[in-house]
Amino acid sequence: MEGMLVNKDQICEIPLLRSIDEISHNYDAWLVDLWGVMHNGETAYENAVIACERYREQGGIVILLSNAPRPWRSVRHQIAGYGLPPDMDDGIVTSGDVTRAMIAANPGRDFFHLGPERDLPLFEGLEVDTVPPEQADIVVLTGFYDDTTETPEDYRPLLTKIRQRELPMICANPDIKVERGEDVIYAAGAIAALYEELGGEVVYAGKPYRPIYDLALSKIAELAGRDIPAGQILAIGDGINTDIRGAVDAGMDSLFIPSGVHIEGHDPDIPLAGSEIAAIFKGRGFRPVAAMMALQW
Image (tube, one colour):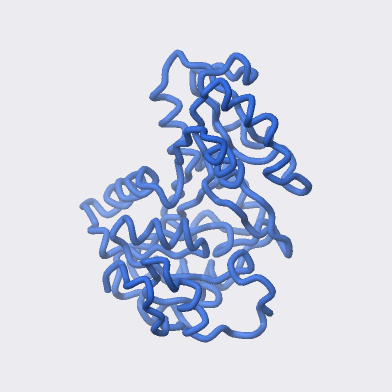
């Protein structure tokens, strides 16, 4: 299989798998999204954990690829609290890791951190100063101060002031919305989109942009002891414009795990048809090679 670029009007059915084992033998490594595939922001998905463990038992490499705006060690600690064991994968690569590299590439600059205190590990060990927006050279956006109540419009006045100073922004999490338990909440990408609407410059650290895939590929090569071609890697995720688009742009196959973020009002207890999933990708110019309602072996 190869990453699928398609005619924008194509709507042929996308294969719906019962088990990832149906295609796992085609790939040397997986890039697995965390939020929406391995957990829901509160609890681990047991069947997804088992799938990763089985694949590794067969010699496959599993890298967890997350748009979390924190370093991988911080994410490892977080997901352990959801019940995800440390031995189910071969490593974690986060947009926070990429963001740290971007920050380090700007020595002597002052940064305004736009985001909650829980994301402060992003700056640990870096010789940088965080300052108010009036004194900053660059904005580092990690998320909402309170993602349970706020919307992007709450940030319009602040973003307008930042735009007036023509500050560039690093967005450490391109996700627009994510699921948390039974709820769908806004993520940092929604604020970044508004800043771009206001004419601001945004550089994105995570999926679907290339830097996070380059970092993941280097991690896989290190583990395998050789370069693994992108075509031998399967990206698994629930984000259409992050996981699936990013995989196709990087030359990888992708497996789509549909969620409430994209299928509003759908009863999760009623399986989707392949044609219904194909309709989601109609006109997008890219699509996954297959889909599953949830990752399982």
